[in-house]
Length: 425
Image (cartoon, rainbow, N blue to C red; front, top):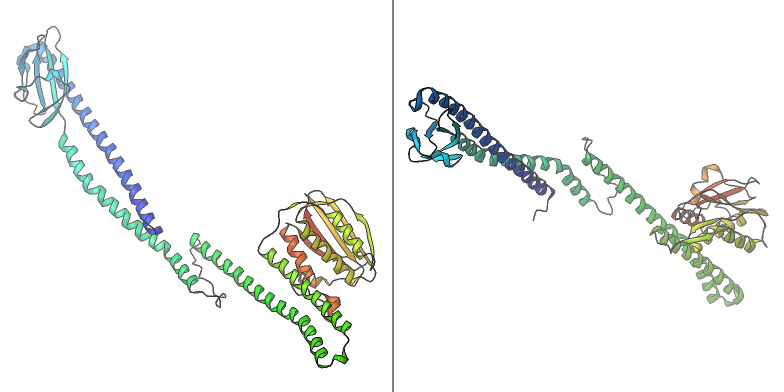
């Protein structure tokens, strides 16, 4: 079985050309034979007509043997041969339209002789030698043409596929440590060049994804190291100097840092599942109900304006969408001086969620960077207030997975306003 593209292309071309040539040769031979028979019939009819006129004038003595291509018989009403040429002796031309005499093929026609009971039968030789010559030529030419087509197709497809083999060899030599390498793009401007360009774009994405993954692992390790170091430091101090730290203080530190580690691990798991494209079965979710619930949760810490919350239903995972609203509300509460506002509205095919605060706002130059993982703009603030830098990254990933978008702007108090746009259910 043929496996390579080159072999299949050559076999296909040879098969198609061979069938086309065979059909064409058969049609040509049929047409040639029909033309020769038609020519012989016309010549026989002309000879029969002329001979009939001559017999009418001079009798059977008009029979001529000068035409070597014709055999002639004159037959009366009783089917008896009255006269004939030498080649026609021993046969009766009136019994068939075609005859073979001494290996020669004749086409037979007849013509009545006026005012007599005689009928002239004329057989005119068909040039079978011409058909035989053409057949021999075709038997030589057709295989030769098919062979030439096969060789040309093999050569052309080999040259066309050479860049593909080179690209395959280059990619095969690339390892995990050589993701910066790229395949050479030929300047042909054809499909092979497009394949090479597509391959390079794929390598760009793989390289970027690998860098992002490595950076993510490094940042996660660094973030998890801090609470672990804090727990270990307090535990070692309690073990070496029990009188220096009270049990309640040690328990509070361990619980607080453990809670921080648990939240970080949960966030990492959410991001990992989103990166894999995994989600539960989506259904209609009332975004306004989630917003009202989150507003009630933080109302004892800040003043929350919920007057702009209207009905808004989106299609998605209610648990993940709750993470979006909670992270945005917690972020606004953390940075607000005392006021935040939550609004939900429907704008045709889109449902819009806005979360605003009266804090310091976000500089325009950082409004895209804040959605990256482990990014905290205010590096001088306390770690307890700053969070892990994963909340907004989770918001961005969840919203993107739901076919929406998230933007940052300026609030009514000149603080930060986060806008989430999702398709309406």
